[in-house]
Image 1 (cartoon, rainbow, N blue to C red):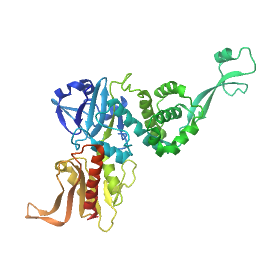
Image 2 (cartoon, helix red, strand yellow):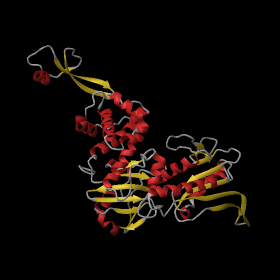
Image 3 (cartoon, rainbow, N blue to C red):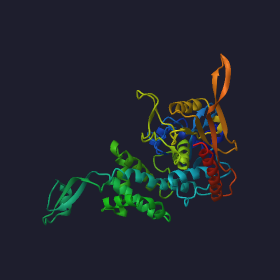
Image 4 (cartoon, rainbow, N blue to C red):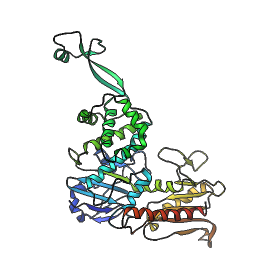
Amino acid sequence: MNPMKIKDNESREKEKFYQVKSIASCVSDKTLEQLEREGVFVFPEIMKDAEDITKNQMILQSCNDMYCTGNVMGFLGSGDERLIIESRFSRGENDYFFQYLLEKVLDFPNFISLDTNANQEERMFNLLLFLFPHYLKVAARKGAFKTYIRNKYNDGNVRGTIDIARHIKNNIPFVGDIAYNQREYSFDNYLMELVRHTIEHIKSKSYGHKLLNNVKDEIKLVVDSTPRYKASDRRTILEANRKNTIRHAYYHEYRDLQRLCILILQNQKHKLGVGQRKVYGILFDGAWLWEEYINSLISDMFYHPMNKSGSGAQRLFASGIGLIYPDFIGKNPTERVIADAKYKPIDNIGNKDYLQVLAYMFRFDSKRGYYLYPDSTDSGNKCLMMNEGSTYEGGVSARKDISITKLGLKVPSESKDYEEFKRQIVGSEMAFIKSIEVTV
């Protein structure tokens, strides 16, 4: 099995995809929304969590005789074929940059390896596992999931519908018990049992307890809600959840958790892609990862409005029109700074990018703006001074008080292993933060 590697945001001839032709035919010109319905796991959830990734974005888009990729990174599989989409800012054989973003943003456990030498199914399965604590924590904020279930009883206190067939089978000769079914509102239901089975499965891994260490309270909630848990019921519980997808809008976080648990349990023996699904995989939005990573570095100096949750929303006009979410707003009110995270090379930042940040700067009376981008080619920083005057009347000159700087965070390009990459990029982070601190 020879996996094919490509980069995000690149174009490549269709004929070069011959070794993954099944994957290409399954995903080409399909939107992420379509692929998510077919079993591909997209993080964050495309419908509500990301501004830069949309439900209409495609993994592979046909452009004449070329396939073009977008901002998505991750892994796809179909049968014996494997397609790995790496970050375009990584150099060398291993995509250490992608792994580092996952570790910083999502508390990715570094004891799970993403080395390309590892089995590809194992890599995808590990990614599904490490996402579980995040989704469990988000879902548990709503409390334990509660729904109606049908329980079977056989005693003398009839409180439901008599099950005649079961009564004849179990209660002859008659000794006073009656078989009956009762519909009850319970925490111990098919979904909570599914989550419990997933927890127990992860615990069986050598790194399971480490992985679940940060969600102890959430795990206790699940365990307390499932007193009838039996390991032998796993197949039955899995099938019940396949047939009963959570549809209630209030519990949409549990719907995401349900999908993840099903993927983990049905793929536990490296049988990824079996059944009706022709393509499987896990994908991440590179622009979202980059923005959240930058926030982890500069959160002490900047506010970070969240378009996902609606917090920190700003308006362009006094009438309440013009909803905007600047990526970063400096916390110094007397000398406000606006910054925009861009998951693109320095030369690709322009046109609409300029208009957007300038509008934000005008709104907040800011004299300085930043584009924060990953620099893998030693492009360095570039300061752009705002022009004043009209070309038609002459006398155009650069202003001295308003500027936008393209500030790059150097991505190490030559690292013998992941530990060395981490040491190198920590140095880059220190220099990056220092460059911002001078003006904030």
